[in-house]
Image 1 (cartoon, chains in turn blue, cyan, brown, purple):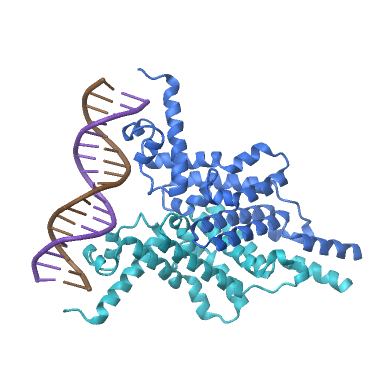
Image 2 (image 1 turned 90 degrees about the vertical axis):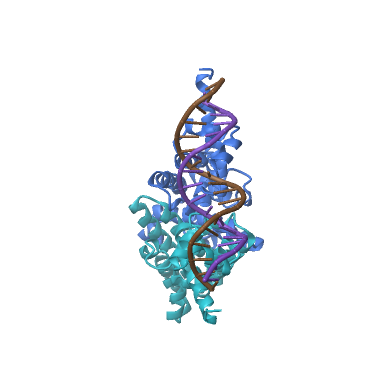
Length: 215
Length: 215
DNA sequence: GTCTATAAGACGATAGAC
DNA sequence: GTCTATCGTCTTATAGAC
């Protein structure tokens, strides 16, 4: 056995890393095992020493992509939950994310690609979804019960923000008109920020504050 | 020429109709021309008498799917714009849409499938997007300037609602956990309804109304 | 216009040498 | 573990009969 024990592990990580990037930008069908292995610096034959099928690699890539994505970088650098959530929203809906200047989020770039895959793949996607949604939820501003009502629970707000981020980025990727992309991302960003604040914007809060002072 | 003049047109429509349904549920790569033609009651060879390539059919299918979708049915039946927008939101984020019990919206089911296609396909998608967004915008409740501020223009609200609907449905399709699907769709629906009302929910409006009466 | 037949290539997965 | 070679299958697109 001319291979060091850690060698296989290193090769495997290179494959997953290359696959995560290729899959997240092009989707499952548009990426061949040949392409993945070439990007990893190996040939096709070696693939099956690491994975039993292409779908198995896809499953693992989704998890890996979410780890590499910008969301996790934000989590490492910030402490305050509210500040973190706002920074996640900002970077998620940024031009840099749209232009693939950092590792793209598989949630937004693969959503429709996942729907028809096997349960293993969809389970992986489901896990990433809950991970993102939980990060968002941890940084929601508290809102007084009498204002928000139970209609807008914290969980509901975080789910809506997540859908807004994913939907906004997914659509923006597909549009051809540059102005429409910008308008869409901006609209999603400001609405997401408002939801993070509790569904009220600054003007409304001022208004409510004034009226409380009056009453 | 043993074929009636209208015969070709009828065949073409059957092909597009079959393609719209197959593409919208399975995506571009997972659907073969064979499958489309079989669903249309023809064989593969006849395809190229109608379209020059698979992508050309895809482009046309996206437009066709948006015409067949439930959104257009709502438009035909209702008059009041605000009522229409609320009904569009409701049916878009419904269990029936998720379960494909009516013609699915290509916006939500194909978003990531479109991003890497040629400009013609993406132009078609862009048109559908603006169509949906405009329908939403036409039915937004007006909000007093002093409350909403210019941060939340009508256009921004409609763009955010559209992204919320598309994102919510796209993610829900991919999830494996039934409870998560329901919670997500519900959260998106209620948030979208709030945005349609102008970013305020009923409790807030009552509160503001009270305070105005006091002042 | 629609059919059958086929060209020409890409793909996932396997076999066997080293 | 990684390589080259190849099998078997599926695909888009074309050619030619009717």
